[in-house]
Image 1 (spheres, rainbow over the protein chains, first blue to last red):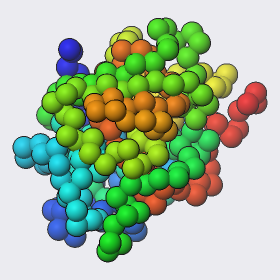
Image 2: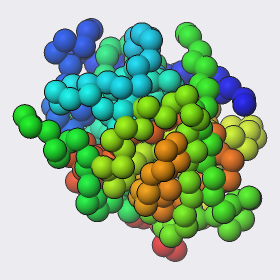
Image 3: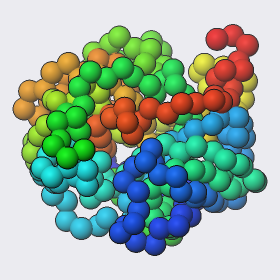
Image 4: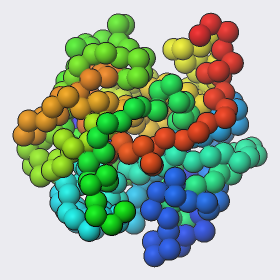
Length: 149
Length: 149
């Protein structure tokens, strides 16, 4: 089967130079960051400031250790299947964060909710739209069953 | 800057062989599909049946036309910046759908909410967790401003 070559369209700047004090999820982060979209893609940002929240898709560029299919997520003390977690070392190292836009200036998007490393390569931006992205969930697996929330 | 080579970890099967009658978003779809994860990744599915919803990340494998940074989304009659839309022809053709699990059997996940083509290459699966993925939005751009919803 084919392979897909992904080329960064920008860089994400955050206060985090290593993972030691980095928030685990954007929803748990009050930190600011900025997305620098490469100038050749700037036209694609038209209208983006009219949204309050965005998906950032990016490469876990430093998570290049060997993939383990059973991992212990940061938020639990048990081991689970990799695809039941957000663990960064994955066969295709794509990270996903939902962030809140605070300002847009030319090719730079300022945001709140940083949970990724400084220098993270940006792969895509999509608008977060409640009608598409909010679902009523009745089971949330290990996250609701863990002993030490 | 580096490139990232993404290799499918499975295939998504749906009733849709072309885009003509395909639902626009999984939230608007009542169609069933199934994810066939390649057997070598099956161990990564442990615990996944305990979630009701998943993110599927996949390649828009047939959306290989030239990228246009200003596009008219399916749900509007106006042109917007590509990154303010979910339009499939993107610099990095990563699709994202949130689907509801109906059953898991060995390396196959059955789901409701199919909005992608049959044969779509699967890149990643992540659990959908309300505490991480549901945000209170106050602006939703062209989606709330469009004239013919």
